[in-house]
Length: 352
Ligand code: GLY
Image 1 (cartoon, rainbow, N blue to C red):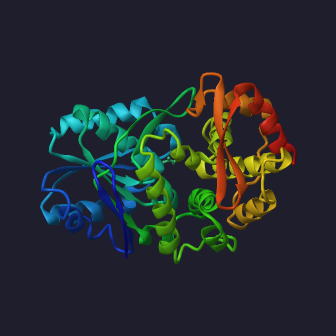
Image 2 (cartoon, rainbow, N blue to C red):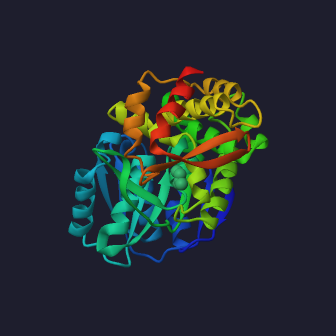
């Protein structure tokens, strides 16, 4: 079992290890007083883990209710958010109560946003069940829904009160869902350095993910503690995401987030190398590592379509957009470019 403390407001622990869902009630009781716990989860996760979580919370003395929405990125919208908010109101949750996000990135982002909005903010906890939510989205307090114009365009920052990451959940993930999370872990490896990156070059294993998750979370926590609201350094965590989000949008959100980020990461690494921005060759190594983890390194979308889609990205500020340039493994830099220069960058990344 590993515990990583996050010094934000509120401060909280990220606990990583096996068997945590079955004991979530007892563990949450250590940091949260007894209250009404509204579990928000999706139609894929509910049959697997909802009863276990409800039983553990009830046994610890919490009043428990559950809201289940249809699984998938297409649910990450105002309609589902509104249903969750209405549910919280129908269940008479009050300001001392808590939302528990049980599931992957979509669930965590949306339940977190519901918690940020309901009564102008109630507490929430994250119970991630995918690799993607374990290594990235459950930590750091970003919550959001998608808009027609693009990914995660309406959201809020709200830190959870606890994150319990049960690594047993990862053992039964479908291969493509596991690979989705590997993309975010790999992104963190490129940012963090050789030690983490090289561990993933032979492929991430579902049987021993605890150490990798802990390293990814530790790295992210350091960044979030220094720049919680993404004014500077936290933008580095968007490595691969400008093109990644554009791919998601161009695919009408049918390409999963991690797969889109993987292709976006490969495109940026190739572009950086072709444009002479790198200090050492990175593109081939990044692509080989992505492929080893069953992730795409190319996209079929046209550069113009991707550049257009990226214009509504959050990372745009007026006529500029900040991209993340991998200069070497463990050395990435923010580069603010005029929006008009994004197309040649993407073109360079697609050609290489
Ligand atoms: N997923 C990137 C971040 O939390 O900043």
